[in-house]
Each structure stands twice: as C-alpha cells, then as structure tokens.
Picture (cartoon, rainbow, N blue to C red):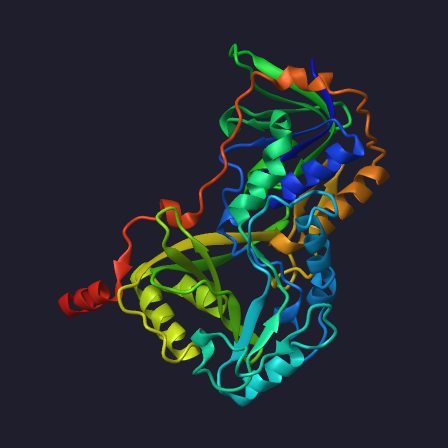
Length: 414
C-alpha cells in the first residue's frame, strides 16, 4: 500500500504551484485531477499578474491591494528562472498592461487612486509613447509593469517535471477512508487491473475550485450537514478574433475597470482578445448574443476609432470559486479551511497562488505533517496510472463564432 505525506486534488495553478513547492521541500506528494490540467478557472483566466491596481480605484489602499501588491515581483523572479518554481518556460504575452480612462470626472479620480501604495504603479506615457490603438482616447495614457502570461503555457511549465506525481482519476470511483478519529487515513481510486488502489496519506489538500464543494462533502462523509464555506461569483467573458493588434490593458471608469483586454494568438495564427472587467460581470445577466452586442458597444466607447468590421465573436462562462464571506463580496486574501487533516483552499486570484502555497505549508507545519522523502522509489507505485492532458485555451474549443453583421441580421429577423 503506497503512502504519501500529502494528496492534492485539483490541477489548476494553485494545486500545481503547491505540488512544485511540496516536492522541492521533500514531501511525498501526488496531485489528482479529474479532467484536464488547468480546466476551469485557470485556463479561463486572462493571465494577468495583478499588482493591486483594480483594488485602489476607490481612492484608498484596500486589504485586497495590500494582499496582492507583492505578487508581481515573486512571479517576475520565477518567470526569469531566478526563483522557485522555475517558470522560465512559461510564455509571457506581455511585460506590461496599458491603463487609460473614459472621459469622466470619476475616471480621473480613479486613475489617481490607482497610484496609491502600489509596488507596480501607473507611469504616464507621452504622446509619442502611446500605442496607435489608443491614439484617439481622451486624457492621459499610462503603462503598468503587470505581466500577462499564457495560462496554458503556465500549466505545461508547472507540470512538466512532475508528471510521475500527477494522476487522472474518476470522481465517480473515488473514496475517502477515515480512522476512528474521523481523520482521513487514505483514499481509494481504481488501479489498472480494476481493483481499488489504496493510498495512505498524512493530509489532503483541495484546490479544485468549484470542485472543492463535492470533494469536501465526500471527504468529510457528512452530506447535508454543513454550513456554506464556498461562494461562486460568475463571469460571462467575451472572445474576439481577427485583424486585431496584440494588446493588453485596462480601461478605467471610476472605481471599476470598464473593460480589460488581453491578447494571444490561436493555432491558425489569428489574434484573439479576451474581454473581462465590468463587461464580463454585466454579461452574467445577458445571453450570448446580447453580450456580444454589448461588448462591441463597450469596445467602441472605450477605444474611439477601433474598427470592429470582420471580427468574429464568442463568449464563455466561468465561476470564480472562493471561500465564503459574510457579505458575499470577494475575499481579500487566499482562503484556507482546516478540518482535521483536510485543507480546503481557494487562491481568489491566479496571481495569489504563491501566497496560498505559503499559507498551506504553515498549516501543514502546525499539523505536524513533515516531509519524509528519502528517495524517488515511492513514485513507482503510481507509474501505471493514467495521466491527465493539459486543457486547451477556450478559443481553441469554442464553436459557433459570429460576426456583428450576422447579429444585425438576427435582430432584423426577430
């Protein structure tokens, strides 16, 4: 019967970052993923390593801004290969994001507030330095050294050297075994010969996003008797592809980011924009076609003079799974719930994965879960088990793309 120090459920950025750090510290650690690595919140994210900008737009230093403002330097060093985990093979879409505003008093206040107390603060650009795309925008244009990475490339990078510790499992055939103290003593998953494989463990960590809820219920074996510990805040994001420049930035309107644009190149060589920010929160109340029309109007208002003809549009929905708060608002820091030797965690933002991992190891230390790794022979017990693939970017799997011309025809028919 194989024995490990830690079993992680969930192959997104939180689980993979923690797996890397646990392995580096000498823990016998495996990660179990039910679907594809990165599927869910990680692959759906825009890949921005936020430095706290959006949390200071009210004109004050918030708890969220304080919690995230150190992250860009941690990521930057890892992306250079100068810190662990070594992320030097991760694709960097851009080393900076542009910041501009709509022409309103509240926007001007928001731009001012964005400079408060940040390690990465906006730097005003001259007219000559302003990108052509924003040439007709009113007011000042700034740039922030917020890096934008490819989430898929990050997942590939984080999992590349640890594939022998990453296992694909069937959630319908997963069991948790408890000891007399109601602690998790082991889990069971199918083995290649069809018999259950029992894996003993000192601790279990859930980093599966919205999948944390059913996993926690199964692990605790107390269905229907729990208070809400997780909340979901939905987004309805927009994809646009075609003759567009590579561009990454935030249009600020008062205390909100009116629209956030990140870009990449698809497998056919087309530029693809992901649109988030307020437009994706508003989009939760709209159907797919309504959101595309709304997003087109928002782009035209945010970037005067932009040419939207011939572009193809699509949308996707994703739930941001977080630790529950009394107010229902987004938590200001990563969340960890400790129940015996079960840890349930939510990073809140992709950029906060390093801080979540640090907090997890503090909990493990307090639980007296210590590294026991002496050699790598323990991994042989898992060599015949299936391995998950890495999820594709959303624009590679999206179907039924539409143009604005097609939408107008649909409106006429309606």
